[in-house]
Amino acid sequence: MIFNIVHTTAYEYSAPAIESFTELRVRPRQSNRQTVHNHVTEVTPRAVIDEFTDYYENTVECLSVPFRHKCLSVTSRSTVETMPHKDALSGLDLTVSEAVRLNWPRRRELFDFLMPSMHAPILPEIESLSKKQLRSSDSFTESIQGLSSFIFNNFTYMPGVTEVRTPLAEVLQKRQGVCQDFAHLMIALVRSAGLPARYVSGYIETEPAIGSNGLVGATASHAWVEVYLPSGLWLGIDPTNNILEGERHVQIGIGRDYQDVPPLRGVFKGAERQQLSVMVTVSRTTGEMVTN
Image 1 (tube, helix red, strand yellow):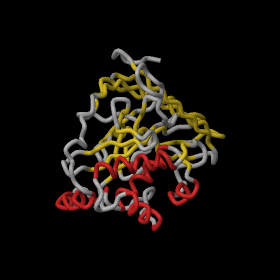
Image 2 (cartoon, rainbow, N blue to C red):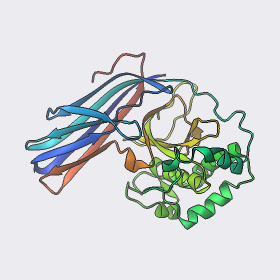
Image 3 (cartoon, rainbow, N blue to C red):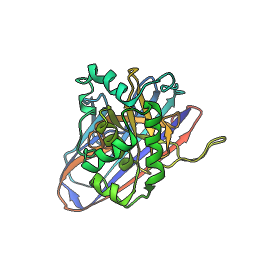
């Protein structure tokens, strides 16, 4: 599938900002899962854009506006082709405890994705729930898929009830949240069982197409989980929609949790207040770069 993606982020300050510095993580990843055919980033007011690759091999674009400005608008335009995903779970006839033992020789390489992180802490209630959902003697494949179903069936997708700083304990109590919350929850539960899991930031085609159902996703960006398999592959799972990652998912970046891959992070000097607006469109195309 080929998608045109337009992601616009705009800041309006209550008084002109003297200067600002911004990091963007909105450029889709180039991988065997997807091919980025085109990507451009436009900034108003005009500014030079530099880029680098971070620790997790995500592309980061950075810009500085060293003069007074009342607004800052950044638009990312990408054309991405996603590939059919192979069934990575087939043939994995093993238990949860066997998967933990098989991953042990690679524990140093996978260390970041085994440890608790800022948004995915391993709380006592997480440990208790993990022991119920990921029992050591149960089938690894059925347990991982069952965990996604558990989150999907017991937590309600409800935009506005949480924000980035909402603790995972509050999400557990409310049983409500958005895709980032459900990704963090699943990551914490999987890591609590001794299995590596990482956070994926990206986009999703939410509109139903011919022969498919509509999917739930954030208006700014989507989030899901990758669980490391003893076969050496990362399996993408979207607990918000209770599906495996597929051609309708577009990856931007990976990390321990949201803290590693926010779409935009920055600082400015000047007014205390700002108003943020975000608009994202993901549409199928025949391959021509979107221009407006």
